[in-house]
Length: 246
Image 1 (cartoon, helix red, strand yellow):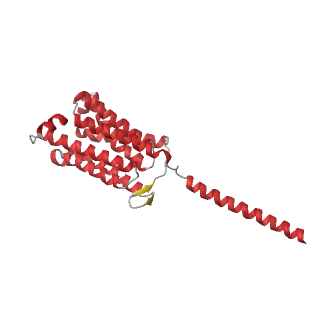
Image 2 (cartoon, one colour; image 1 turned 90 degrees about the vertical axis):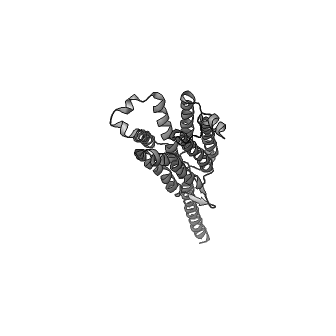
Image 3 (cartoon, one colour; image 1 turned 120 degrees about the horizontal axis):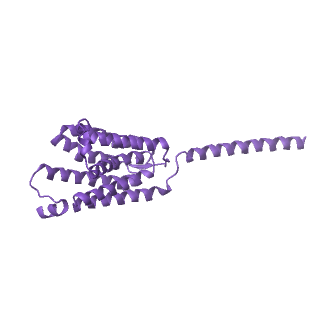
C-alpha cells in the first residue's frame, strides 16, 4: 500500500500534514470528476457530489490546518449550493434528471466570471494579500490558483445551462495538469485531472442537442398566433358563406 501511494502521489503514509493534504486534494478532485459525469447527464446528484468535494478538500484542510483557509473554502462552497438551486429551476424529469435548456454566453456573464475568478484567487491568498506576500508567488502558483478556482466556477455556467462552462472546466483541468507535471509529477493527480478534462469534454458533447432557452415558449406563442389566425380565417369564410346564401 505504501509503495502504491508513493508511486501515485510521491509520498508515504507517514501521517504528516502534507500526506493528508495531498490525499484530501486527490479525493476532492475525484469527486469533481464524478460530479461532472453526473451533471453531464443533468443529474441533480452531481451538485451534492460537488458540495462534498469542497468539504473533503478545501473545507477539511482549512478546519484541520489553517482556519484562515475558510475565507476561501466558504465562498467556494456557495458555488455548488447556487448550482443546486439554479438547476432546480429546470423542469424535473424522473427522480433526479433535469430538462436543461441552453443559454448563450453574454458579455456581462463573461465579465462576471472573470471578476469571480479574481476574487476567488484573492481569497485563496488570504492574509498574504495584505502583506505583499502574493507578489513573490511563482507563475506556476498563479496558474494553479486560477485553474483551481475555474474548476469550481465553471459549474456556475453549467448550472445556468451554458454549454461553454464545460470547455472552461476542461481548460482549467488541463492547466492544473500542466502545472502538476512541471512542479510535481504525481501520477495520481495527473490522472485525476486527465479524467476531469475528459469528463468536461464528454459533458460538452452530450449537451450539443439541448434545446435553447426560450425556444419552447416561442413555439407556444407561435401556435397561439396560428390558432388565432385560423379562427380569423374561419370567421371570414363564415361571413362570406352567409352573404352568398343571402
